Length: 277
Ligand code: NDP
Image 1 (cartoon, rainbow, N blue to C red):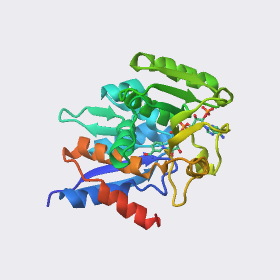
Image 2 (cartoon, rainbow, N blue to C red):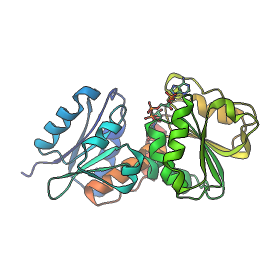
Image 3 (cartoon, rainbow, N blue to C red):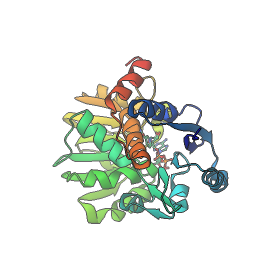
Image 4 (cartoon, rainbow, N blue to C red):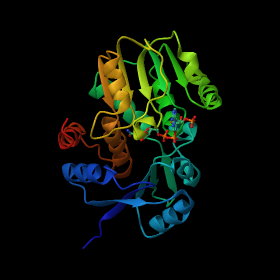
């Protein structure tokens, strides 16, 4: 009997990863036979673990916190979007045995915002909170949608300024600290800090969200996150978390590996029903 193609997500922590469930649902839906597991891999063990996985015939990996920059360095070659972002969340073995690195976080977010939730980015004023690995992955795809302006605000101000300079050739972008947000307004605010993971919020001034504006937290949880609550308290017309992005970035990885595009709406609906939303 032909053995199943093997895929995995590496990260640390990884215990509550929904990726195995998502890829299992994609495989069932598209009639693909594959195995997808979640493995706890600390940063210092990444290269050895990835080498072992691929040497033993593994076909593709997803990489999550804290491995995306290491995965970028590990890939033999990278897509343009991964090259620019400096972070890789998907590794795929190519026909010649080389490893391709891609970053599907940005397209995952854009698809969830625009297709699943009907949120327009063109000509909008957009604020991203945070300048870590997730921000790096989403800035390029957001600028491709021609927003009026994109501001990156971060606790460590230099990182926000550095990131804005890195992407400045793609559109109107600037970086600042949270203190610089006073008396400014945005139509879409995206939380790409890791604060929701500990139930905290970045320090945000009043009236930051424009009338009818939307909020999106990259983090997700079985309960509304602190930032989703903040959006609701600030009269957001939509205040969403990142579960849809998670499923959409997984669908893009699945497509890279299997050349088959799964439908995402039923998977998102199932995961939402399992968390009571
Ligand atoms: P990183 O560790 O790379 O970056 C963390 C960011 O959060 C930095 O900008 C950091 O600021 C900021 N931060 C951390 N603590 C605080 C605090 N107390 N106050 C203010 N800012 C703070 O993480 P990632 O970028 O990889 O991930 C960010 C979030 O995005 C996580 O919640 C992750 O789960 C989520 N995510 C969701 C995805 C999805 O598919 N839905 C995909 C990818 C990420 P500083 O630079 O000053 O340290």
